[in-house]
Image 1 (cartoon, one colour):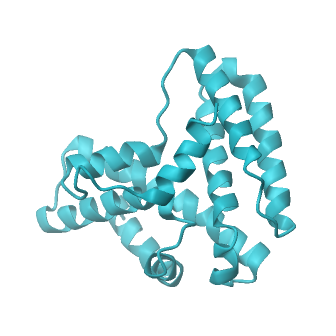
Image 2 (cartoon, one colour; image 1 turned 60 degrees about the vertical axis):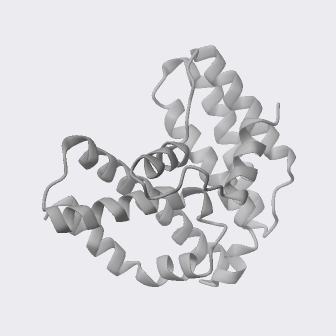
Length: 199
């Protein structure tokens, strides 16, 4: 089996969840809809042409890995915390999005030994957000500022500029002509601004 067959099988197995979230314009997945759009586009392109160049193959496989992990976490929360009730899950979309962002930064921090202290702070914040979800509470907006402080300190110390997967794939979607240059996702922008610019 190849990765394209894996993707097709994954989509079939998770059709109900994916379809329900997309059909209802779920805010829970709004931050990475660009990743889904790019992966779907490349899957269709591969189906027609039977071959993608190495760069596009890497974009496809990285994007698929990413949405697989995101949906796995959402699916776990849906079953464990919300009794498979999509509407109940959606009430906590802001908090779930924050959890997914923290997870992105945790994964990035694992790549650098200099981020040990920052990783501990991220883990602590992740635990607090998880506890809020367990208690069926949305996190206060201050949690976004806390994440912003942790990540700005972390990337300033490393002297690197970090872009989240959803930001990178949004740019790829524009480059591939999937999105228009001026397309604007109000909710995604709101979440990104809360995290990246609340300094």
